[in-house]
Image 1 (cartoon, one colour):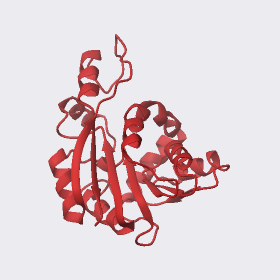
Image 2 (cartoon, helix red, strand yellow):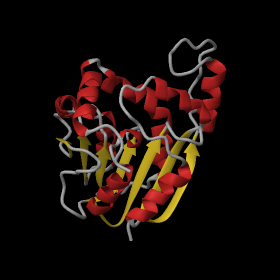
Image 3 (cartoon, one colour):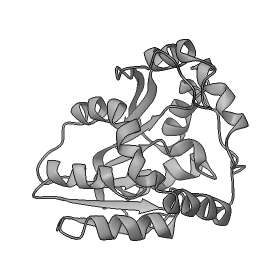
Amino acid sequence: MPNGAPEHQLREEFNRWAQAGRGEEMKESHLPIVAPTLALMDFKPADRVLDVGCGSGWLVRRLAALVPDGSVMGIDVSDEMVRRGQLASAGVLNARFLRGTAEQIPAPANSFSKVLSVESAYYWHDPAGGLDEIFRVLDAGGSAWILINYYRDNPDCHPWKDHFQIPTHLLSAAEWQDHFRAAGFRDVYHQTIPDTSPTPEIYTGRWFRDAAQMRRFKAKGALLVTGVKP
């Protein structure tokens, strides 16, 4: 289903995000759903981890601390995000950054024990192709973890489509699981990760109609889909 934005369009959009400082802002907005996800991933000190859609690298640095005897690679379609990640992570010896996409990961087969992607997968040009590629670079017994806030089963995120500047994929949990299984993953399951961070009494942003809608969205939670490579 390769009907998302082409790579050059994604790169241009996320380069704009990087220049606007949005990469650095992502930690604050994403951590409430990322922290519970990391707790589920059972990291080992020597794990080799890939972050797909790493932005400016806040999560790569967090992951690097969890795998002190291992390594973390972050890839992003935006060369400006990659540049900022490299600069901010200069002192993190087990982290590196490369430009790449989910559909073309710059790594040999069987390179990683865990692959994580946060708030990136619905932007992928070809979600099925991205999961095929993640399967390729995972070692046997390795696991993939996709965490997204924009999915069909949470209706309070559907209006976001009107604000996106690039095409996106609004898939259901069942559709994401089907893609995992088609790629070859086993033990595929999903769950939701509620966002328990405080919600303002009055919401004035553009993503929600009001604070009540934002609270409903956060209570439903982000979609986490995971599977294991046999």
